[in-house]
Length: 268
Image 1 (tube, helix red, strand yellow):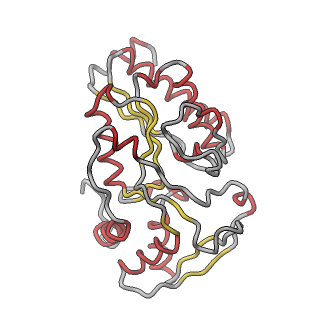
Image 2 (cartoon, one colour):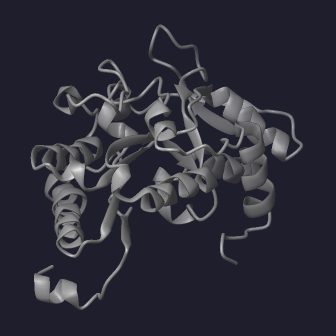
């Protein structure tokens, strides 16, 4: 995007760059670099040249297995080791932005496990809530991956699940704060829940008894699986974001009953 082409867009107070190849199983490095690094760099450059507030999607996948922590306040992001090529592609731009001083002018938001309406297009990358609803309607049961980590029993792997409606409010907050909130920020619920808790909430929303099978995890995923994620959102709270998070059971019920059962999309 050259400056002449960029000027054709006109003037904007803020630009949200959330698009990317989000497939954690994608193996085409050149494709990931083009979509998740080069294009982000191009858009960020355009935004800064045009005095447009730039908020972009990073990812909790940049934290890898969590051994290096999930701290959005540390400046030492080079220590992080993502578990897959998608995570590395997002991490690469975070590093570039930091090294060039861009994080003094733009905001990168590290989404944790977001779920909610309008995700059907994501295919295999859509949330368990979406996948489980389909499985329940077709078979009455849900399949969860077995655990291959001695510290976690089957179904007790833990993730920070964030309802998309909360994610939207958080993201818009960074445009409202302007340059007062720059750098990297965790966006999550601030809680870690098990896959069993999430799955039982789905059955409950459908008023059905849980029927859960534990299935083998593909070999290709076993060494690249996050067993525990939890967002420390104190940095987000420090920017003045004071809205409460939607409790997991309530958000699952809302998604299932108002969107999945009715086949309704946000905006309909």
